[in-house]
Length: 417
Image (cartoon, rainbow, N blue to C red):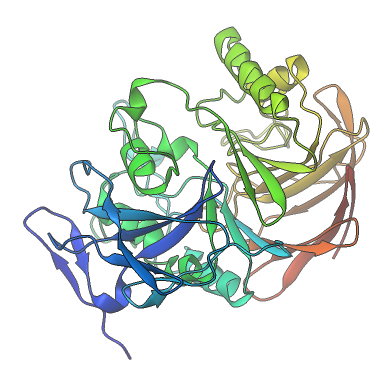
């Protein structure tokens, strides 16, 4: 078995062996793909080889405290082959036919806050109950053209109590990002280009520094968290249009006028691009059901997200075929009687599952409409979207089998086991 070498430098971050070097390709608002690689120590940025021609990658600076050097380079459209450190890079296909979707992937170790008791401490068994690595490897084996992560990458907020099955780094520095995301995702990072969505665990109070440095596709600004909201952007690749909306701050059950106005403005901005057949990618779902912790009297809470629902009511966007989100730690897919785009929720790819809710959802009222059809599963896994004539076949993969299969055709949805 190949040995993995991990060293902790005086800087405090993990440095990786050559075999475990983390390199990935992400898609952003321009038509170029972007290659990024994490360095070990103070070595210079490597060369990227594009169709046989070498050029230096550039440093993404300055690195936040507790993070290693990171290098990046654009991969222009039409590039046939690319590599970094002799590792071939996955390039965007001319047409995306198979898309893998994962979300909410880290191992849950909640930080005790002032006033909390030990009973409030949520600890997931990171040895046996955290399934992200086998999920990521199973997803890589599907050979996708694209991977979409719906947000929330780092969940190890606080220290693991002695004797509990969650030992390892915590907080929002590189060692935790590596342990909670990059190491278990490494095979999937090598399999396809990615679109990353910002989740509430990447807020500026939590993992925001790592998010803007490691995963945000735009030029790096250390002061990115000086503003509350980041702007939406469009990814056009594989013959598709993905509209990416940062909903990390959206209040779920108690909408504030200021937030509703801001998200309505961002939806109007998306609408000005006149999307056609686009997917709207955003961490918090516009229309979904969940059950609150401690809610013993009702099976479900009111639908979420109140802020986004009111923003959509003020600024509906035409030309959206699907809303794709995470945040709720189960799998849900809903279509609606009024013809608004279906809502897909994939937040079941590693972290502790949300409380159980029961269907059927068909006929249930939500945000001034009615659920026309629905699918629900409370299993760890990932979603796979395969292009079919006029739509997409949606498979929810568990760890052993396909748990649910649906067909999404425009605003229509039909699901079966």
